[in-house]
Image (tube, rainbow, N blue to C red; front, top):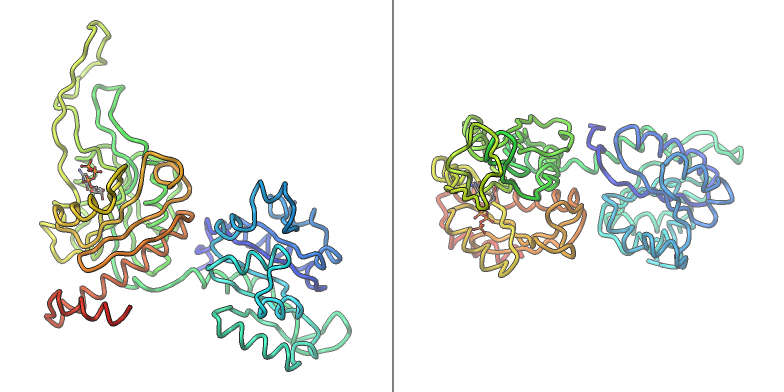
Amino acid sequence: MLERLSNKRVLLGVTGSIAAYKAGEVVRRLREYGAEVRVIMTHAATDFVTPMTFQALSGNPVHQHLLDTQAEAAMGHIELARWADAILVAPASADFLARLRLGRADDLLMAVCLASDIPLAVAPAMNHRMWTDQATEDNIRVLRSRGVLTFGPDSGDQACGDVGVGRMQDPQILVSNLAEVFESGALAGLHVLVTAGPTREAIDPVRFLSNHSSGKMGFAVAQAAVEAGARVTLVSGPVSLNTPDGVKRYDVESAQQMQDAVTSCMNDVDILIATAAVADYRPEQVEAQKIKKQQDELQVKLIKNPDILSTVKQRYPACFCVGFAAETENLEHHARTKLHDKGVDMIAANWVGDTVNGGFNSDENALRLVWHEGEQELPLMNKSKLARAFIGHIAQRFYVRHKSALTGDNILHFDKKENSES
Ligand code: CTP
């Protein structure tokens, strides 16, 4: 379960409490399990531990000030909020909890908490009388009602010599609790097949046609599907990415090989997510020897590749099929056309060809999800966060369709249900 932390971006907030020294251990454990960590310290926290400690342990500069023009230029509070997959505040002092409840934004940590919509967990640490004071109890109750997770506190000897509830939760348990945040269970028991990366279409033994796809989106989708409890198979074109834990991966080169690999897995696949940028055409003839540059002009005749996605949908209509549409213009129109032409259940459309909207090779992306009865915009964010949101929507649509198939409902019927849900 701790493998859920692999490749996660965790923002660790450290506030003014004697337990701040234990936050170093939290950073170490998070990194051990593969998470990337950035630390924000409040002014009070620096009275207990130096930023240098966290810089050394996290391998990243420590963020401290809201109005530091240099730091803001490098990674400002909004970028920090967008960068992270989860925020953990450990230790969270009584003062921090009170200010969080008020929604203040007068230091960097408060501003980041306010600016983010990702899971926020706090690990309170304070004297046991402060913890049981009515004011703190009220603050915790309100924060929990807003979805803030509280880890601990534990009971035991306190730094002030008292004994009671108020010790920061043990770092190892904190880290395990945080790992659980990334487990949704939305696809538990299902087999998800993801295609990813580019394909390479050989021209001769040393040359090929391909595209700029990095595979990052597909790999992030595979990881998010594992986190959602699915059994995941990944069929990938040539990329330089590590296989996410728990994913069964097959490597292929050409579109034809990708189709063969996908077909061989299709027996019990419930959901196909085709993120691969499959070459639409391949050279009709692959030269046996390297082509020499003897002529001034060279013509390579291209023929169409099989469309893996629509072939699968035709052969396995019960499989919930999601395609991608990478577009440089008329995003919505092309997405709807592909939805109908390929007969699939959902299209995830994204802009390509500029750097503003993420896309190929970028760490960020934005998607417009289009299905027969609706659509949903997923704004620009890092690809792992986007993949989790994307998987959440796929799970929702999968179950709506599944339910309607079981009860014999028609599309009009669940159109209405959908309106009443939203
Ligand atoms: N796809 C596929 N097999 C192909 C081509 C595409 O499975 N031979 C899948 C991709 O993985 C993606 C979707 O189909 O999910 C993309 O659809 P497509 O119409 O091929 O998009 P483009 O290649 O962008 O098409 P066009 O160039 O016409 O816009």
